[in-house]
Amino acid sequence: MIALEPVTGHYLTLRLGGEPYRVYFEESGSGIPLLCQHTAGAHGSQWRHVLSSEAVRKSFRVIAYDLPYHGKSLPPEGKAWWAEEYRLTKHFLMQVPVALSRALELERPVFLGSSIGGHLALDLASHHPDEFRAVIGLEAAATTPGGWLDIMNHPRVSNAFKASLMYGLTPPTAPERYRRETEWVYSQGAPPVFKGDLYYYSVDHDMSDAELAAIDTARCGVHLLTGDYDWTAPPAVSKQAADRIPGATFAAMPGLGHFPMCEDPERFLAALLPVLEKIRAAGNPA
Amino acid sequence: MIAWDELQGRVNDDSEFRLAARFWNATLRLDVGRASHRLRFEEGALAEVAPCPADAPCDLFIGASDDDWRELLAPVPRPFYQDLFGAQLHHGIRLPADPLDYAAYYPALRRLVQLLRVTREDVR
Image (cartoon, rainbow over all chains, first blue to last red; front, side, top):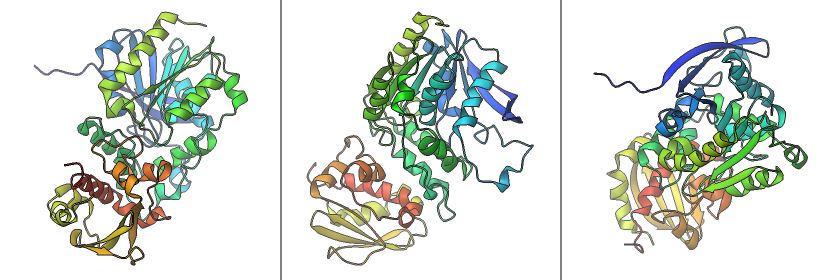
């Protein structure tokens, strides 16, 4: 008998900025919706260990989506995207989980994201606190300038450079097979996408102390977790952001890097589960 | 610190390195503290390892103090020493200023550093 994993995939069409985008997502479990955002230049398969975790699935409906232009979410059919530079903006990125949540009629989901997803967690808590009961930002920061580099989409450099660079953001203590899988996922991205995503990561995401201080964690809880091997958003900058947000929590994750959910899932789940339990126990603060 | 006489054999016997270094023709200078070595690659194979002056001409280089090299080549490196780019940003590792000079062969450089880790004489 074939042992199917408890994960199913679906497509739906979201209207984003007036354009229809066919978006792919995978889901598992039942309970509180948990929307999972992958890192720049990658796709939702990074969340496969969370999707298949019995400890998560018993209380949460895990939904991991591919952003447009990533993974199975192909570019839109209604515009000549090939004639313009791909660039991910904060405005567009924030629309995706909000539109997906509304389309699936989710009741104030929890948002969980890493890297650009971690940054997005903070932007959503600031701009859409009524849409989400809590956000969990992995490798998040108020700002991470300097990463929007031409070398990330240069005709003389293959995707292998980007992928290898991402391997270097994983911890040396993680299982080698998962470090290599993380690298592999990066080598799959269309050439302009990683750099285009870094526009959001390093330019468009730029939160002031005042904006962070204005986040209302009574409406939308904020929890930040950061691996100590992450050289692009080290724990100190995540803590600095958390310290600016009244009521936010922060914890460093020893022995994890920039891709905790896929580079060392066992160690990551040990850090994530207490946060999910805290959110579950708090109920829906709306 | 590094068993230079072992390096050529280790590199040329390493299938991951040979895949990453395919078509590579270049000279790489490694500046380890005050001592420099020149590594010459021909079609992806390490053809020669030899001491050289610190200012010897090369296509690219990796440089650092003895202490930074010890950290970079530790069996389990401390945070940010696990990667050349990260170690350049946060520690004392030096790379060419223009990443275009080494990006195409970054996977090969990464593997070379891993092979240098296992040729460290002082941690055996």
